[in-house]
Image 1 (cartoon, rainbow, N blue to C red):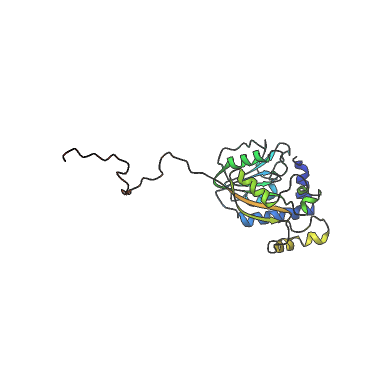
Image 2 (tube, rainbow, N blue to C red; image 1 turned 135 degrees about the vertical axis):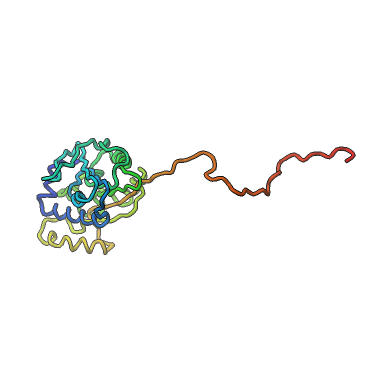
Length: 250
């Protein structure tokens, strides 16, 4: 089930641990997807902590918040871009979105397959989705003091397999939140250090998985041969044809 929007807001904006988590995931996302002009960027779930870097340069930014979670106006002091929607029926036309971020949208949904179908529908050709979910092997999914302790945690293999079943091609996988989900001063102050170390040390396990996937676009099929053979071989011409019988006396 989806978490309440007020609980998510309070965690990310009113607690030190939440601000550390917000910074760790946002910085990793921004390193993979630098802000670019002309793109339509959308987020599903509770995406405001990650969308702010794209407000200035993107063609448009849209925050889709599912009904069971609730909605809040965002960003403060600016025109609202948040939209309350059905989690399996987004109010967007086909192919509108260039970049889609999913945070607290897949693991808490009771219909993850339909959510991914909607994600595939709204992405345009060449569009990409970044799915961020709790890591089954990480510490953050084992404690319910953060939003990552709720819902369905994933392993990397499980997430990539689910994306492939719904028309996506996984392009890259990374992780974030390498420090433990602790509010003690030491871990909060050294969180940035652990993020830098974690991206270089393979045996450290991040608290969340981040998988970037592209939308598969299939070429339309046509009947017959795809190309005409310009110079066909004539070696077998005549094989199988009847041979005329010579007349008597010839």
